[in-house]
Image 1 (cartoon, helix red, strand yellow):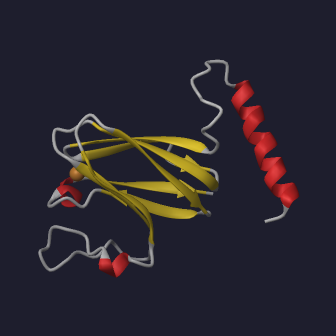
Image 2 (image 1 turned 90 degrees about the vertical axis):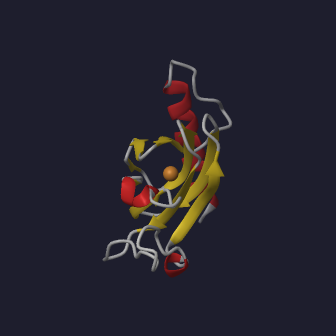
Length: 142
Ligand SMILES: [Cu+2]
């Protein structure tokens, strides 16, 4: 990427920051912040459509159990399951995986920074049964 493009991105980001009157965004958090909240057995995400580039997933675990978060680029097929029939086969998705967080405790808030090109992504929790229970959500980057 050229230096000029990087500078333009930085200027755009600071313009967006100063346009935000609420002051809730720290100067440190360059990139689009996506709020992710996890609970049994649901993931909610806002926004679900975002521009390509630096993305900060702020992941809050509302419990009552530990939850993890794995992000993969979507393929043409549904996510493959392991032989157990209840967890996603992460080995089969090694090439599609773009990032992940290990299981986090209830009440915790963690950040996952990603640089995502345009595409469709699936985020899910792969604790036993959680994916099938409904813990998956799509993210569209354009
Ligand atoms: Cu979970």
